[in-house]
Length: 158
Image (cartoon, rainbow, N blue to C red; front, side, top):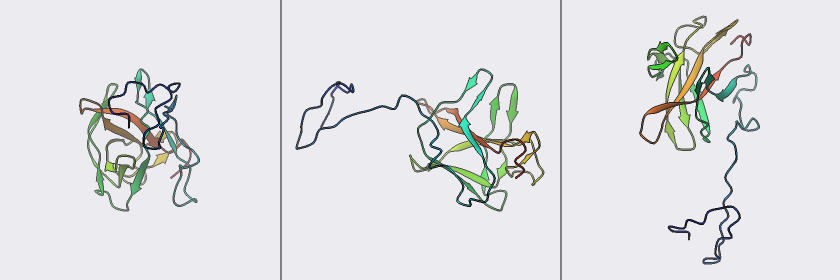
């Protein structure tokens, strides 16, 4: 209907074609949909899901829906080695995977393990020591870049 059209501005009225008229509205800002976010088990502690931001490093705001899938067994998933600032975090067996529901695929992720109270490779928090899942997704060149991260707030005790 709009093959090779360059008229995609919101104030341009698309032509009526085969009884259809399309309108395009780009969101000004990508943010977390808190209404649709949460645990399948409502007794679980709260979590934080936000754009990765630390110092000068800012993750891309990808407008995708995600699911973090947990299992009882470490080795269910495997994190990717990544560098954040001056720290390198190695790949390791973990008890979760991250699925991009919008694109129907599992994504790479890094794991910052600061607390091993629940065992190595398991997302947990003890006091100020918080493990974090770092979402790594391909850019236009196919290289993994930072997007979001997922963790339990300090003091939530998982």
